[in-house]
Image (tube, rainbow over all chains, first blue to last red; front, side, top):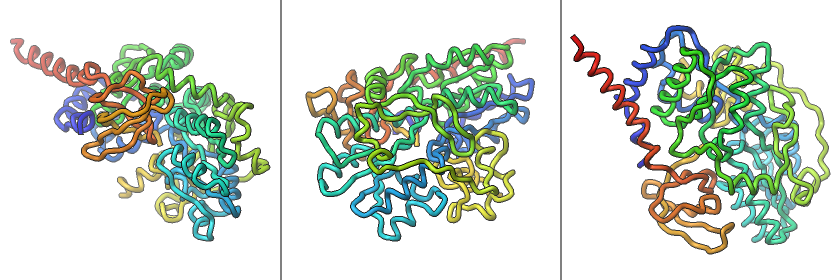
Length: 361
Length: 84
């Protein structure tokens, strides 16, 4: 397919890797934010092409993985109620809550459905006026325009039986939280290409300047990733800390303005707890007051209970790049995709899932 | 979750800017896609699509940059080899 296959060219990838070997003189640690990038890196073995002093740290960019246990429990509560059709992206179904997962609710008779787009849930609500249709709104800035449009269209159609359980998270506040941590090993970032397609990259200039860290907006194919890493290493080697854009075929500095406008019309910025990491100020999206009728937490009178993560799941450290999945004693033994302890083992973007699938040995 | 793939717009329907949608071709598979966020995109353009929404129109000139970068690396290498 055009715009995919040509970026998977092996000779091109080897040339970029050779150049990386030539220019790298010191041990550098670079974090790719996005779990989609982590999967591509591990799947194509790009990390094995890098010069040994260069380390890739896998970041927290997996919305499924960072959705807090409390919200998963709320989802399980709503999905089990009679008269409810609970709609979710497929990734969320196996994510363990305190008492099971959405798949087990479905097995016990709950009406849980996988949708491809939030608009599918709106259509369902219009077709089934006697049912309460709830959409589990999980995602980063990439997904927020789709969720915002779903709410906007539901409001235009005056649907009373559609609501969202909102778990939206924002990337730049999480990058700052990582950089502020005393354990931070990150010296450069590959910023997530599709988050930046929506939001642009103007938000990264103050972060790069304040923390003296290069940030390269990067795409998802092997040539994109290797070029992004090379651009980042060139900056580190020459002592620069700038924002650069490797993924310019999709990303403009200002981002997608119409998408941002609808996000801001429907949502406001709120504090959000990240699973395994803790609360990060200004790092989530919640519905604005005028759209409160579409808030499932309000509609179903839910209150957030404090719940504890299983102690033997180290996904918090994995998500912050402090350990690699294989360093977790539970990895592949007590924790597998069939019996996961944490979300990073089941999400299609989770680092543990990537290592389980491609690097078990 | 942020998975988004490129496809070619085959048809555009709807005059309302917020309900603009169309058919996008992903390597032979046609899907209905919301085009509200790419008002500048026309039939024949490639767009990046995520959960049923086009979020950008791909820029062909920028798309060539990575290959241009590789060509420049080749030229530099040849220059070095040519030097006595």
